[in-house]
Image 1: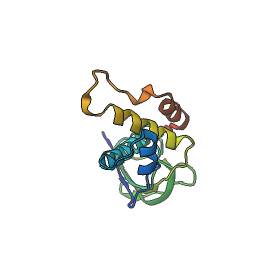
Image 2: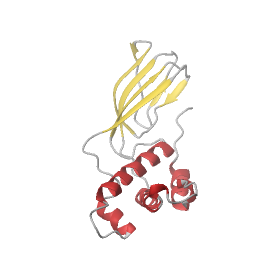
Image 3: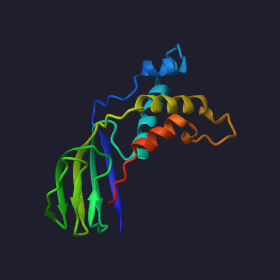
Image 4: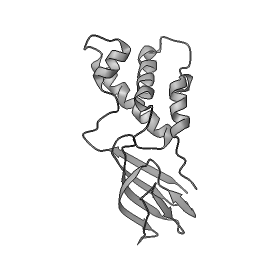
Length: 167
């Protein structure tokens, strides 16, 4: 029994924080770190998406499951469109007007849908906090284990926006 989710950000992806915003927050004036900081911005967004089960940027998602559920809320909303939904090989109706809710009385479920972007209070600051945390602790120079949850801003953002998707 398995649940497999594949997420692909639509291109071009507009990250919630620009390179210039991150550099200003980090007080970095030179360009030699631009590639690293840009990668950290994307990594921070992906971390937050996983932590809150929401799509922060426009994303195409394929969900395949052979697990039997009575009802199922599609993860990584907000769902904006459902391209296809099949249950045991038959087309099924799915309500995506709110969060992407599917009645699943069978076992072989496949749903392809589009989600995001979620508009979330505190998102920009949470991304900046993660970028700063990872930028200042990169290279393994510290013996401490660095957890993103050490930041009250990140912890508060995750607690405020976490979306469970099993009902």
